[in-house]
Length: 75
Image (cartoon, rainbow, N blue to C red; front, top):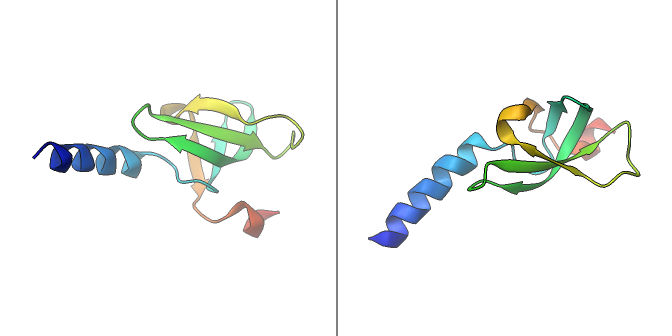
């Protein structure tokens, strides 16, 4: 019973979270998602204009999904 509830919660939160390699818009520019934490509602984003800088953590509400395609398709 508990696992069923946990799975449905995780599935719902995952559906709200941009997947890894998605292209997103942030307040700091365009980048791609390198990591997600659906239960915390956060994503790490590597900015295209600053490829040498470590990915930044954003709340999923603070990013806009541009494309679910892989970053390799957009380089």
